[in-house]
Image (cartoon, rainbow, N blue to C red; front, top):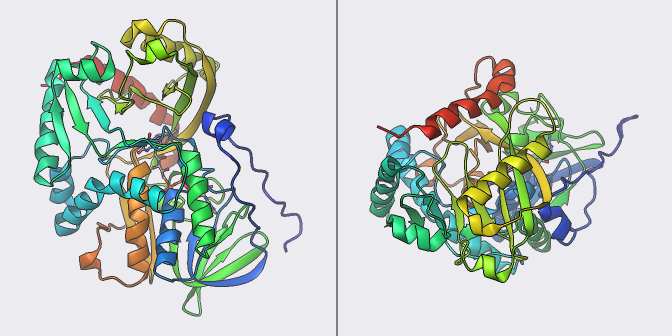
Length: 438
Ligand SMILES: Cc1cc2nc3c(=O)[nH]c(=O)nc-3n(C[C@H](O)[C@H](O)[C@H](O)COP(=O)(O)OP(=O)(O)OC[C@H]3O[C@@H](n4cnc5c(N)ncnc54)[C@H](O)[C@@H]3O)c2cc1C
């Protein structure tokens, strides 16, 4: 053990999920020298799903997590289970990645079903509701976005439908939208409960999970991967780096190329007081998950205690938590005047890793080593599904059978400067949102 290296203190965000979710399993730190066939760095959905799928195939696997399972994006997101990317549609993906792109689209199409199936098989109680996901359009011209999505996803056999303005009004209880895109396989979950449930399932299957053990670096030694932490190291044949938008959080040099491929943008999440039965009858009565076409996204879903879980973004000086509360209160009352007084019992935030083209980046990092980043705020379902594919990759399934469109890491130039400027993109989004599309 190196002198002066303390165990990191785990501070959970002040989130609804941290308040209502039973604690996770007790986990050891990584101390001394260990060995595994496969090492996974990062204990979010990607890392835990990779480990679980590897154990299903009987592979020896250890997860090294900087804090606790679900501490990153996986435990603090909105919990919407969405089987699409944020902007690119199937044709964009196939044009860019060819046959691998087609396999990736199929993975994405099935990703929500995969998540609900994993939760069911491992009896994970994550407040899951497969009520569908709706993307209402916020201007008449944007119905073309929904039409295109329905056309392209239908070609791939996804359970999608175009909704008229009346259908969206009935589904969401608001006149604010002009129709929409509907995918029946989506829904929502308590994401921290899913993270902790996956960790428990992975442990029960024989995965070793080390917590409070930030990986400082990994390197190749004697044809093995060696991952070092402050108090120990672990070597393995194969490696999966599943640190995503939190890649630069604990070690700037762990995967600096990957960390610089995305702009980590702070997304605010908040949960209202529980809404009364009467109000709920008129606001998203079918309890679907909803995120619309605004660049400054409008999104909402209920939790199991009938709170509306929503959020937004703010820029500039001042108390951001107070400003986001005022902004989102005004929005909710505009969308649903029947909601009346709004108060927020929980307000928290987390980093979303945005890429310049809204496509994820999936990489081979060396012999039997893989990683990905670039969730663009849409990868609750995808990260679970990717875990299954990454587990196949480390088991030697040929690339031609994998739904993994690999690219070489491509850091964004002047990343440090652009990261400081990235929040200003919100102003660009607001201008675009106010304009009709051509
Ligand atoms: C606020 C917010 C809202 C979102 N809402 C939605 C949504 O509603 N629907 C949707 O589809 N997507 C949403 N997303 C995106 C979604 O949460 C992510 O795509 C998904 O959780 C990514 O999972 P992951 O396992 O790849 O990454 P993470 O969950 O971030 O896991 C990475 C893990 O790596 C660990 N780590 C980092 N560095 C090290 C290190 N050096 N050593 C060891 N461990 C390390 C971190 O502690 C973390 O636990 C949202 C994201 C955020 C932040």
